[in-house]
Amino acid sequence: MLIITILTVSGLTISYFYYGNINKKEDPRVLSVKRLQSSYNKAVLDNNMPEALTLISMMDSVYASVPHYTQSFERGVLETDRASVYLNIALYHTAGEEEKLEKLDIAEKCLNNSVRIYDAWKDRFGGLNSDSILISIREDFSDLNQNIRSKILEKRIQDIIEAQIEMDRRYSVTYTNLGVVMRHRLLQDSALFYYRKAIELWDDNHAAKSNLNVLLGKEPLKRGALEKLFPPDKKKP
Image 1: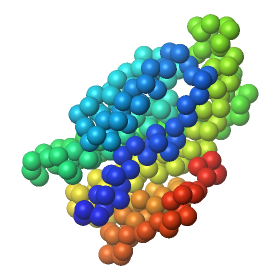
Image 2 (image 1 turned 90 degrees about the vertical axis):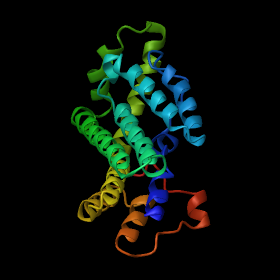
Image 3 (image 1 turned 180 degrees about the vertical axis):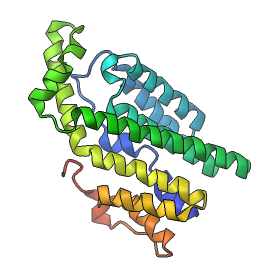
Image 4 (image 1 turned 45 degrees about the horizontal axis):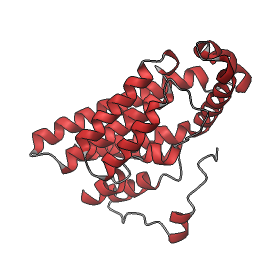
């Protein structure tokens, strides 16, 4: 059980460390998220889970306050991060089984929220090219200063195109953590389902493969030195 926990929860901020994209053309309405993200990363590294939860809520509130971002993929990423924090609390910072199960329940709800957000976002943007994306989002940025609007729109279109490519991997991370939740509830069949679904979506999901191996009574996977230094290209379709 400890091995399974370490394999997945040690990657608490995988969503943002792996998918982060800081650029000077950021939308000023949500720019504060970048500063909050730095504080969040530090809180996780310091193992300050209450502070991490507070910062996730603050970031989510920023996105929720701007209409364009209310159903954005970023909020799905935040829900997966929030679930990871609750998983960490459940497995390392609870006093008893009842409290552990309570935190696991919260983690599951966050992960299901993440899937719903991704589904809605994919329905809107999944099949659009750059021209169609521009038509779809142009009005969302009409209140910005004209001098910066075009650059911000260009950046946002690129973010959305990259998110189209990355979406299966984001789903995969979410399903991996759902597998962890089920494993620690002793729901082995459900854990097996989610790990396999995660791998189906992203064949290079090392955490899901390792968890699946352990669940099946095998040895966890070990990354080679070169694989650690040169992970698979995240933009590979």
